[in-house]
Image (cartoon, rainbow, N blue to C red; front, side, top):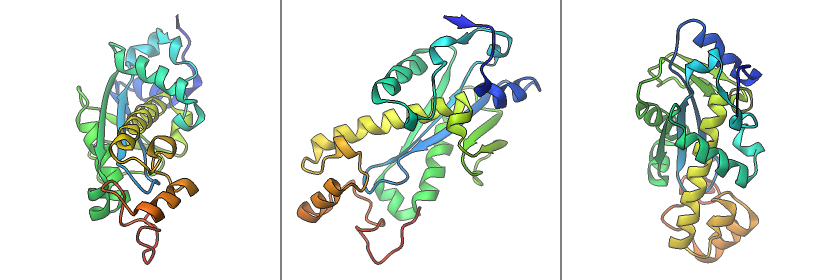
Length: 218
């Protein structure tokens, strides 16, 4: 089902489209806070022709991935990645690199790598949160952008689903930590497993409590 009326959550995109900026990307990340696993970023370009009608109604309830159920995220992931007019790129930075360059720089690296995989390249980027100084494209930073922009929300979903799937696979590789359930976050279950088993190769050694003498980097 498609509609000619653009939803409010295309306000930022519409402002750019109306100025002739057709390739507007949204970028977001998943996994800044966990004690284990990669940080994942996704970049998405929605079709600018939607300014003249044709918005895909299947995406009407697309939102910040944290506001969606797992089933909703998986459904939106399938729509976004199969849509012939939607472009996307996904990139990951693993725990070893996070420890080496810190989580903020790793997040920015993942975002830039995801954007670099877009074809065509974006002309402008909508960023969730704060500006990314290393980004080579013009950008607009939007606080809570994943709930205000469909493009950023789409990136949020792709990043979250990709990372969650990776953590389920890591749960098979490193049993006993519960990665499939907590996705690497510092839950009591996860902390108890670390105390019992010690860290595994995907743990971020630069994060407290794995390195208690260093303040958290995020």
